[in-house]
Length: 279
Ligand code: SAM
Image 1 (cartoon, rainbow, N blue to C red):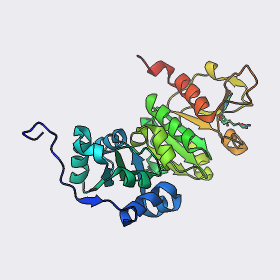
Image 2 (image 1 turned 30 degrees about the horizontal axis):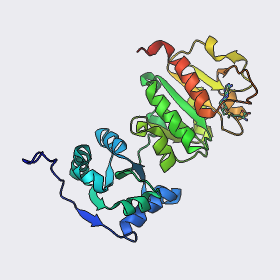
Image 3 (image 1 turned 180 degrees about the vertical axis):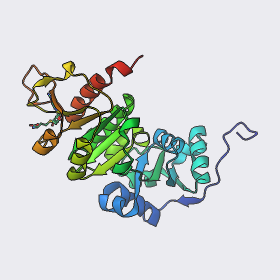
């Protein structure tokens, strides 16, 4: 705090007022195109909460853009100071530039650009795991983000993206994680690599399947568990289902064909972790 009682301003490194500034264009590209995220290894996360989560969890930060409201906001200034100390360029921008960067009419007051972080398949250590969720070709970024948030909530170990999946660093996925992206490890692997992992897994390997014959409430889930979820349209591929020691089903009444992927994952995870969660 300054002597006047106002939060101390972090010295602005760069003020941007033009939509055609190259950094604004770069951030727009990261928001809208996976190609840019892959080439740069960067991604965009909106909001002060996510900035705080990212910085507290030690993620690399490239830019922190602060809108007018953030410039007098103590927590935003703390985030900016941390980001600057970590080598980020702090951008002071107006609301119109923030809106252009994020393609939103009502942008958040803070927008960050961070280094992507994933774990290698070999870094998955079953002996230090509770439950990993493997997603077979997940397509919907909102589903993926919601699943990451739920894995975080139950104390899960991480998420495995098998085959051609949606980008966990897409803005919609990041938004849906509500910050859990910065706490839940993500591993990407081919189906062949996953089948090898599942074949050597020392604990339970449980697939969820509409044709599963076992009620999910009757299984003894030994940890470390591997919970395997199917694609939104096609379900679990046969060889993926074949790699599971048990295929569970969540009973349904009513006329719905199936549950939403993220909902089915949440129900299964809470059952798997039932004896480990207390209020
Ligand atoms: N048409 C797909 C099918 O035939 O499997 C529906 C897929 S469903 C929307 C997406 C995934 O959620 C499924 O592959 C499965 O992993 C899980 N799931 C959804 N409802 C389920 C249920 N009642 N029991 C077990 N798993 C379920």
